[in-house]
Image 1: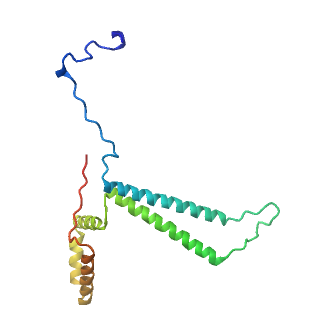
Image 2: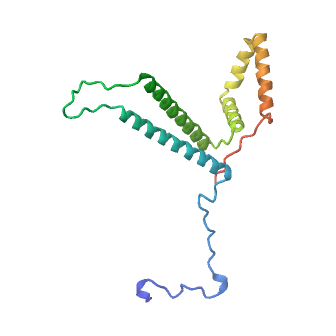
Length: 178
C-alpha cells in the first residue's frame, strides 16, 4: 500500500514494549444470562407460543361457524347447529384463551421484574408495600377492627403458610447493572 492511500510508515511498533493493549473481548448477551434468567425466558416463550396457538385455534373455529351461501341458495337460510356442542366449544376456547393469556402475562411480569418463584414475589410485594407506607396503616386498621374469630382464622392461615414456605423472610435478589 502506498503512502498516498493512507498508510503510514509508523503503522508497526518499533519495539515489543510499544504493542497496543488488546481490548477485552465483549461478552454476548447470551453468555451473560444466568440459568434462572434463561428459565424465565423459556417460560415466557412457551406461554407466548401457547397463546399464539390458542388464538389461531379460536380463529379457525370462529371462521368455520360463518355461513356463506352458495350462488342459488337463500341468504336467510340458518344452518343447523347443536347448541350444546357449540356451548362446550365456546367454553373450551374461552378457557384456553384466558389461561394462556394469563400465563403469558404472569411470565412476562416475572421476566421483567426478575422474579423466579413465589417467595421472591412475596418479598418484592412486601417491600413495595412498605415503601408506599401501605402495610403499616393497613395493618393498624385491621388490628383495631379484628374480632376474635377472624384473628383465630388469620393465625391458622399464617401457620399453614409458614409450614408451606420454610423461609420466614425470603430475600429479594438485587439486579446487577453491568
